[in-house]
Image 1 (cartoon, rainbow, N blue to C red):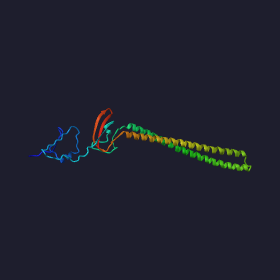
Image 2: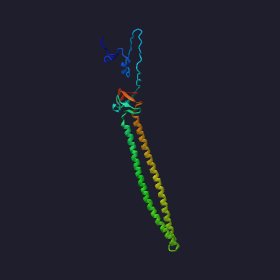
Image 3: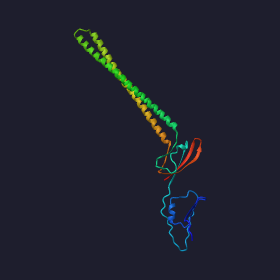
Image 4: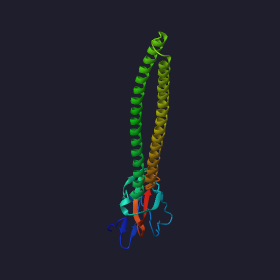
Length: 247
């Protein structure tokens, strides 16, 4: 009597025709779904005939997640149809280098300022060390001189006025050493505070840059496969894109 295909498909017009298709004939089509149009399923049986119409368990249809966003250009797209993406993975980036570069330049300026202040601190500490050692040497000499004068005055070999003058010079040198210690401590504290502020400002600017870079990323809300990427609209300096992820 001849044979005929139980499942027949045509592209123009798009049509899928079944001829007494059995469940095993439909199994390869289990993952398909209608994108548009409608389908009619018809079965004919002889009077009194019974037949099982149960089909094999069909897999769940994929859940589609359309993501619509704008980009300066299509060069910001990071995926294409067929790509596998994980939840949170970037799928596009708004390429705007200007704001990021500006924050990077500001952070670099603060880093250079901190380095300059650290150099000033090292120089100030070295200057204080040299002046402190010189004053300590002078104090040692003046203490020896005062000790010698006290002995000579006690022996009547030197006038008490000379001893008073030596003690005055010793007190003045001790006062200069005290002032030097206070000045050096104050200068060190000022420079350390300025360095700390510069480093904190640099860290804040770098965090702002990270947040700005993160804001330029479009991340997938789910794990799945990219099934479609299309341009929804074109505007001056802007492209509206839709990326569909099937989960």
